[in-house]
Each structure stands twice: as structure tokens, then as C-alpha cells.
Length: 131
Image (cartoon, rainbow, N blue to C red; front, side, top):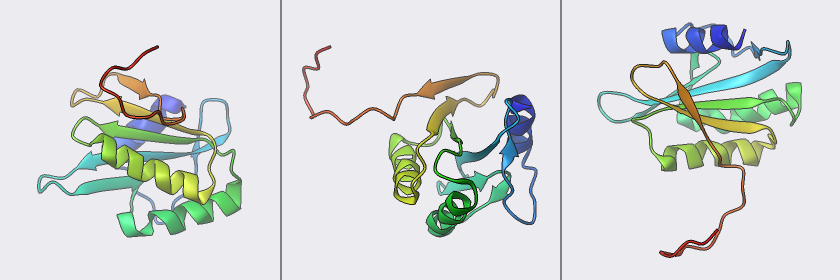
């Protein structure tokens, strides 16, 4: 079922509202697809529906109220997006109160995704990182 959700999002299947996607374990989840348009602006789709960036926090608040903080949120980011774009979405998800947010990165071929670990605490900046 997870593959179906990704294919639906990548093909741009839209709906009149923003329903939750059914995940592989039969539960519900929120899937966010981030991309950049040809003019460079951020394109955002939530469960297949295009959403303006200015409406994301309100949408997250509604989804959180309806489905709770433990509802899984999957952020799929195209290689044209930046870490700053991911940080913005992470900030919205955290502010809304979601606790199960995972981030994935994919390229133009859309065959594979790599998970980006953004759920760890920030560390002080240094040009000589240590383990």
C-alpha cells in the first residue's frame, strides 16, 4: 500500500479535501511531497492535494486535531529542494505537534529514496566535527 501512496503522489492524484493516506500497516498517515517549480518556487502537495505554503500550519493543526500527534508524517523531498525547505516543513510539523515525522530524498528517476535523519537534536556549528 505504501508504494501505491507514493505513486499516487508522484502522479499528482488530487482530491477535493486532504484525506489521510493508508500506510502499509493499515493505519493512516500524512504524505507531503516537496518539489521546486520551473520558476523556482516551492511546490507542496499533501496527500495528493496542492497546498499553499501559507496554509500548511492550519492544515497540520486540522490533521493533528483529527488524528493525533502520533499520526505518521512522511516528507518526500525532490533533489531540487533544499535543506532549508525541509527545515521549514519540520518547523511546521513540530509547531503543530506531530511527533512521528520522517524525511526522504529522491531524484528525477524516482526509483529510490534515501531517508534523511532530521529527528536528532541540533549540535553546535564546528568545522571539525567529532563522533
